[in-house]
Image (cartoon, rainbow, N blue to C red; front, side, top):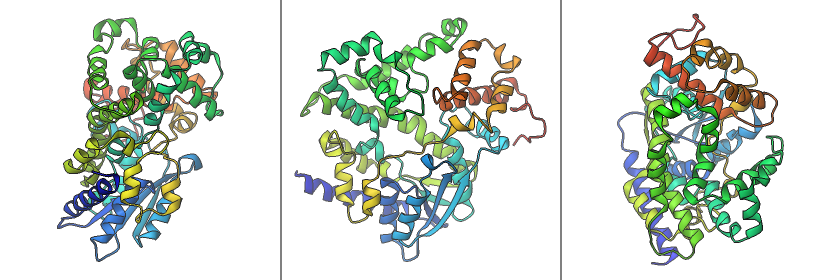
Length: 414
């Protein structure tokens, strides 16, 4: 069919997916970030509800990570019954609870605000709809554009040669030089094979960094992670008819996210956070008919190399205020790098750098100290790496050591 026909079909399927997930005999609402996906969901919900939709949003003190103004705008646009909550990293108790609720060393730092968001929403509703799945189905992440550009970049043989020679590794690119940091990250990965490129852009610890931080003993015991990497590589093989090699790579990356990142990270995150407080979370974008339609569409209808969610924006253009439709994607980012320079630093040192943790022999102490020092000095934002190490140790203490997760005895164990 044509692009307009596909957009109309998408709108129909998505509207039905929302309607089905609004069937509830308990109070119902939605998570609202002010991004495209959650705004569309709330807009469709308002069309099926006689009463204002109950929405809940979360924000941070740091302006770079704060989406509350956009969420507020969307809530006003649809006349929602809106509630906001500000997250501060002042609760060791909440962090300890995460190691309990997730039941595994869960490395996504946005689990903390998701937990707080679920707590806040649960005071008003028992079921909430989310916008999860929209990025994977319709090309919402920056890495799809990076995949597209990398394929063209690799035709510039001099730049590719410089990328492989390590030239870009020598360029200083700390978190105060965000554009330079992004450029360096892009170019050093662009010269790699597609699956390795994807890993470089998505992994908390990419393969090169893993070699530095994991001890020889652990590496000898667990191997190189080849099982996962081989599984990932499977998403970047195979045929199919595409308009270009760049379009094929974008489609493969979206499918990798849909098969790995969405179920393994995002769905796990929202399910555990919601269930920890008795809140059921439902994601209309993950309706099988919506996703089947998404993955059947030409790649460039989802992401054309410069704009994400092309067909989704078209299908729901009447629901999106222009300021939201045109804003760059922020994602559910968490300022953990800053937190580990302040409120969480002592907790990290007392936990991950403790004799008890280091004697496990999992990691190279000098490598962890270097991560912390670089983060302290603002040379790099290692917040997500430090968070993953913290959660691993807290989980280990709770489930393997069978001792209180945090040294501070004043904190209660759930």
